[in-house]
Image 1 (cartoon, rainbow, N blue to C red):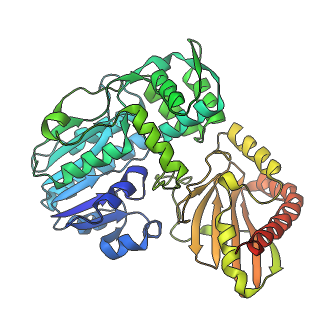
Image 2 (image 1 turned 120 degrees about the horizontal axis):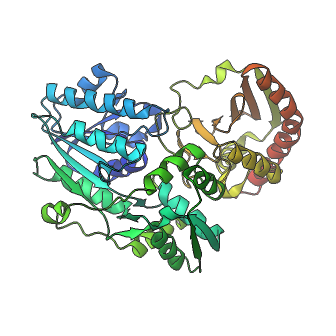
Image 3 (image 1 turned 180 degrees about the vertical axis):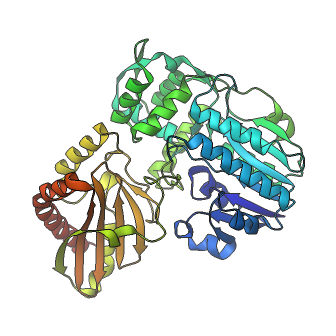
Length: 473
């Protein structure tokens, strides 16, 4: 069997690729930026760089393919992402027909067609388009709220439970949904891919129905916490979104989309999963939470919700745009060349729970300002483990990593321009550099206002990195 995987730098796609890595099948990968995938995938798979709007690349990627897995989603790319979703799905199914692909496997969302948010509507319309071909069958797998380390929904729930003993919540906390553990999503997708099931079908997957309130209280139970929820009728979706971003890692746009989705029921509407794939057992909610927390505590998070999205704030450029920078502020320090590796190791630990080495309270204030402006702030944190291109670190994105030489971060905070932060090591020179490309007069004013803070923060940061490196054995 030869398959095509799309969306492999995303939350679900990366985990599915890991699961299929050792299977005896030929795998094509379609990615927008091959820098975001690990070398082991490049050596194991046929990698095609492009997207579903590039028909030439899509034709090449689908040549000889039996099964194509469609995990493309554009929520947050722009306000008209619904139209983009339609065009993407239409391109994909047309090229699948042209290349005689036998089936498409698609992961969509649960929900009744007549009562959906824009986010879930885009998922539903995509499924309809992919299922419309008389030549290519479509196995349309539908899931609700995904529970797992790195899931946006789970990170919201966990953040609320850990930070708020009492929650004043909108009435949508009583909306019914059928959540599912991320490992079970991967099991179902893998089972479909490796099966000889080639009929067009809609397969709903998930746990027994429960409310968002149930999920919060069950999560609290697993964490050993006592939590209370007071439901009130006057919290609008906009107010609810602001409420979420203050206590969770998501920004306003994503919080709003998730809230709008939670207003409507997303429950299982058929028994096809049990009938067609009886061997896949669904994990109970509390066990799913326990396993997710365990994965976080053991630093085994493979992927996160913010790994990939077709948008400026989540994707990474093919060539970092740092060359555009008008303003450059550099800080040099001499180091022992033999300690370069240790310096680099400390630099990789920046952000998240480790903080930013110097004057963390100033970073916290900047993060809070960013949150109120609709940005990510600092509480998005970072995935623990080896640093890779595309990773998120608080309100930064990793756009380049060269072992023992360079880490380049691009700012995702709200600001009047574009900014980058670089840690670089060359022989016995350790340099921290701030780059900035201003937007208009406000951008230039912003730079000069921040410059005095740079001179304090980055010098102290540099000293502390060297001190920590000297302490490594």
